[in-house]
Image (cartoon, rainbow, N blue to C red):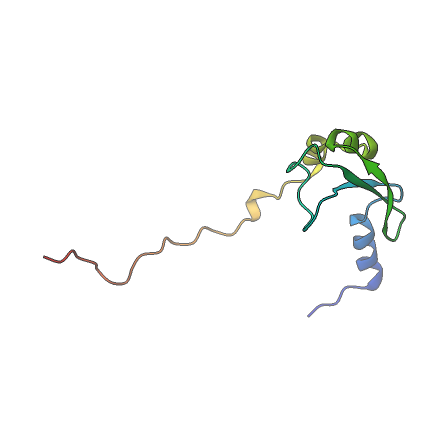
Length: 106
């Protein structure tokens, strides 16, 4: 197995991390954390990245208020995600065919 140098790994990790001061909103509900579109009128907890962890920064009344507090727009986020190059996809597998011939009785 090829090990990469620690400096390269740290640079890759830091490139994926949010910048200090970045904010995110999480629905405040019982149970598991759900996607933001599930209940748009539910209150949201707003967290801020301090460089090491997400720290609570406040509460927003709804999804719209949370988007204003965080400055996030889902459509702008979706446009900023790079798509994979399609030339690197593996070839399609052969279709599955049964090994036996099935016949109707009678």
